[in-house]
Length: 177
Image 1 (cartoon, rainbow, N blue to C red):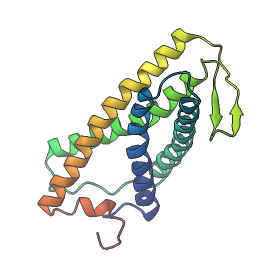
Image 2: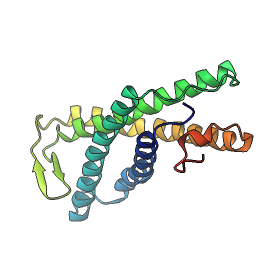
Image 3: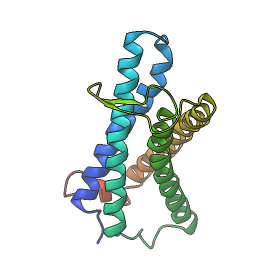
Image 4: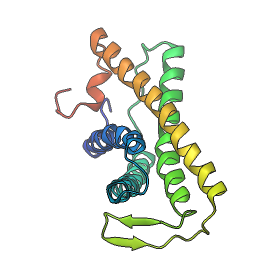
């Protein structure tokens, strides 16, 4: 097998697209003044997208676990293999940590989550600003690490595209890739 499965490819690009919108959206929330109705609406939208994205990420990871990815080409150097594997592992860790820390933080505030501003999910934790601050801080720090890793991943994709080595085609939306 030289390509990822069609399902793996679509899950990759769907999750990537939502992440590329969700992370800047989360950073934008700091620009909305606290205590305004708009902030609550946007924060709950961010939380709702994050929860939904978290479920999609778990599905994606389950698919990858059950459907092994194609082997890296033998012609790749050892450092490239190690770098690719380490980067993918770190990306998956961030994809889990981001929604998890955001969700846990939300549950240690009195607000909880109002799923798509329609369904109130009552918080299962107590209103504890210290616990909230810890998990929210981890959420924010992870977002910066995540963006750096996404940058490395994207630059690697560009490099492989320039090298015409076939690596990029493994995740192509077209079957030719």
